[in-house]
Length: 322
Image 1 (cartoon, helix red, strand yellow):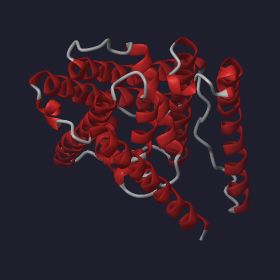
Image 2: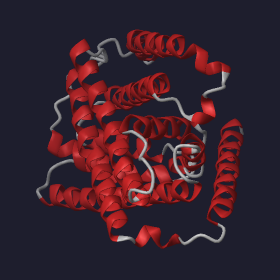
Image 3: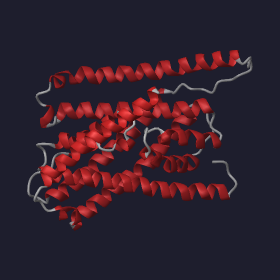
Image 4: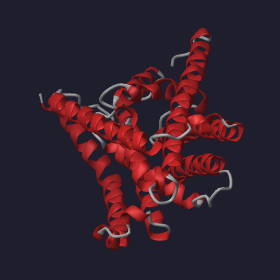
């Protein structure tokens, strides 16, 4: 009952945010020409943004492979990449958890132990959220958006940055110990005295390397947004800095991610990104940039789905477990 309530609340939140964005777009684009998206330079920039987004899956698969190997799982990058690419499209289903469930199920078929599969996804989400929070906070320090300049919260950016970091360190240290205790407790209840729990701790090198990979992902999309914004403005006014656009995307991503039930952050990310860019770009260009981002991300996920499906089929034809 509670899960259903949370899901419906998430969908209502996404719907409300989507309505906000539609109203914003209607007001901003009233009487304006939308053909700007069909300009050759804008199309080229959007294509570049799509390519950069597609790259996120291979880079994330590298980090996922590192996480699993650190937990002493015998996996290869060539096996993990198709799994991640195929299941990623599940985030468009209500609940925003289908991609994780599918990935864990396919990882189990590839020989990954269930605790390691679960914790690899949990660690990935934790490190990705930390990287995103760090980038957002640093952007607030360097180039804060106009909408947040007068917020009291902006005065506590450094403490918030430190709090996020300490929280992540505590989670990374405590989570494996808690999981180990629970697993052994369950094993004792089932009278499985010879149960051996897989390694769930991560070494500092793996944590740092994965953190860097996730931070690079946000930088790639921010760079792609800068290309589209530069093409949309076409020299009529100065383009916001790459740092500003990286922070804008990171902030919209993290809020869309934590919103319960919103499929792929639909509506929420558009609303947050529009608010963040307010004052930095003309209203019409803001809407076009947000629309271009959604087109690029959806197209990129489709490309990864097709590529992952083809790779998965080839693995099955070779009689390898996936």
